[in-house]
Length: 496
Image 1: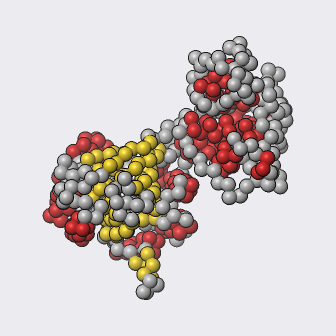
Image 2: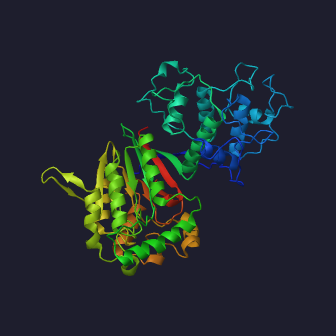
Image 3: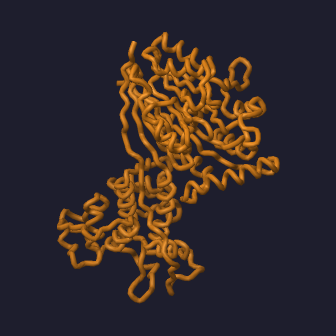
């Protein structure tokens, strides 16, 4: 029976504009010993803040609404020279803050103090700052969940229209209390304090900018309780420690330098992976799906980091192996049995009868309401017959399957891009990989009308692709770009 599946792409990848650093800037009234020295210098060098006409910065002066909107426009790096706004009668085209105010108002970043006034000379309050920053995040299609589990002691003084923004900006680590865990929402902020906030804001955005996330909804008839997955793949960590051999250390250094040249944002691959785990918690993800090559080789440093990350997370992880996970370059895809126990220890499940963890490295099945997730190991570029047998058994019962692989199934719509990237088609079932009989049988079944596989989640190629697997069914393959380059997907599996 042909399945009825609806797959909807909910959001596009995020692309953020971060200001470019300029030459070093100093101010006579900002001493190196001052607590705000680093923040003021940071913001000045990035062009967020300018000094006064006499060259001073005036760090202890309260910042006005006009000054802050200019700082925010400077931060955006956007061309605001053509922005027009006739909404506010106290913001004239001759005013130095006119274009910035027009840009912010036109994009929903600021609102007035009334229907017709902006009050640019008025000192901005701390809660107004948070609202503007939150509106900027929304303008950039970013949604930060507000954690209100640890409220400020003066929470009752925060205006209702500002509360979500205040706690969202606090959750992002951009603002904190003013002593005794008070926020002082109606208090004014000095230029030095705002410089500190904007430095933290920029670092938050810099981290978030490295994440290229797609949100995808998969509708499966019969699913009553929705499930959220975060899919990550190909982080290629190259960590090592004092217990690693000289050859392992040398390989991790060499391979690490190679991967570092591919990404120029300066964010370590392990830090990106950690950020993804933190984001998964904020987004209420139920499971993190790791489809292989999260580590580039089974060095002791890699295995320890992976173990600590997974075991310290509140969200369980499901793993399938990649071709680099279990081998070093000098013995590529060798000594599999030597390294399997390490992965089993990290990702195994507790057997209630033996109180020991177990993990089948070929195929693992996880049952959810209305569907199953099958995590299958095809890291040798071939497919074990056990995987096809499992899929056929669920096809007989009509159970929808989400299949997680490392190496994608060969698709006509992806061949050109994959070949251009790697010089040949490195997906399973392609003639370039000489598929064996078992692999051919697997690919034929996946492409058949009998298959109940709804979606395939894969990595390996370092390319972001969405492809129809076959005209005989509705299976869609979601191939994910390398997570060390910031790629991830959040899937919501829901009923009609």
